[in-house]
Length: 272
Image (cartoon, rainbow, N blue to C red):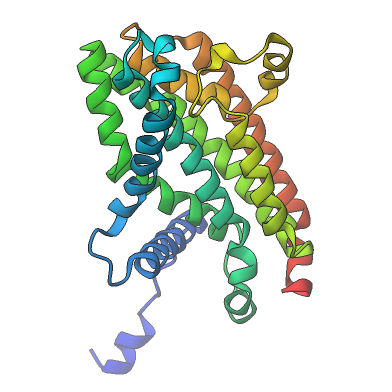
């Protein structure tokens, strides 16, 4: 058969939209991680250093004062502070990176036709990879030691899934808003600080006044911290009464973020 005939019978492989999207998402996640840790010795394990150092600071300053709320054990308080830091650090880091992802990729989006939602989602996915490699194994080990139950260790996936879904919804919404309001990163630093200080990260939730607790019902992060702590540190079976509302609220956050992103997306290219 001639070369011409061979070429004429060649048909390019067609990829489904889903396969193309996942391929682009994988490339963006790999680029994100390579740029972030190029030349680094510890690589993704640097993401573990921040919560560990902050936990050490909290334990040194507040350990004696708050140990009574954790069976008079500074070790238990330290572990509680660590779980809180893991959750709030993932939220603030991943959503902040998602916020700037569209604007920072404006030159690339002007040259190539790419799915815009892949950029903020890839920022969340890169941080999820770090979580799975770095801090999640530590949480699993602590849950196994305290509860001596494999079920508790596996149940950690549920509140952390809720965390990732909430971050995805918030990241999509913030990425869309940042296209229109370029000062948003500065305001978002204040927002994340407010969420951090209002979350029971370094203090027990039981010391919060009742009138303020009523407001924390709408807090997106506090229930996740409490759910993770209950699974990891209580030694009891997972409390699905904590997890189910968290998962439901995370779906609401994701829906609001996704639909607002899709609604505003047609205007992005005029502003990038």
